[in-house]
Length: 372
Image: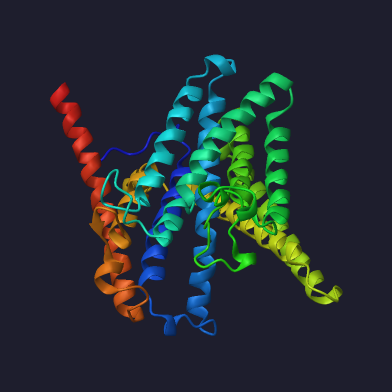
């Protein structure tokens, strides 16, 4: 019998993390396998899927920032004595190592003579794991800055959020290939503006860490107001802020389309970032309501929310493979399937991830009993 989650745990964060990682599993599977002719922007189902796919990474990073900052702030110890500092630094190196291993360019450990330029580009491409790693490291730095300067955590995280969004609006139009080595440029821009094929980065630091820092604001609030997530007004506040940002996003897009005689891409970029942040806040309010309304939440959802890293790594190895194993795309080919088999494989992948989570949970329980 699987025990229910502890009441003291912030259940809605586990739920939204579970939702984000499940969406990530199906999103990667569908995007890797669905044939190009079915990617029809006139099809409302595909449009909705594409929109939700674009919201997955912001949700993932926002909740990561919320959880880490919440746990960090629960310790009322000074920065130098806070155990979360050492744990966070270890987490940084651990996540970064996994991120690069997933993109390792060859099955040989030290011989790179056969690695092509495309493989090196792939290896240097940054993704969500790289962002989470640096987000943890920068969050530690922001907590140190707040303590040393006596500035409120809210102000520090808010300033960092705005700064990383603002720098993105500028950095995306700088050709960093002229200034930085290849292994660093992926942290600064996507390369889309300069039509690099393939893109030099999927997730640069700017603006993606802004979502983690925004999550840090919520994590700070949750730590300073114990049990506030059980109050009826809490999801109302989150949804109100979410709707306000979504409306602001659409206003920016509207003004750009109707009051400008020429295109200002930064306005549309800003509108997209604000839309995503607003949607994440609205989603957080929705899962907050669910966590307060449902008596018994299936424990598997809690387990999924607590094992996001395991699921992230495992599903990528299944879909794309790695240096030491083939993936579905090598057997079936990229963009090769019709909708029904693609959906079937996405559901199968989710079920495999659920089974893996249960297996790990069972193994931990068994080890505890053996030790006892």
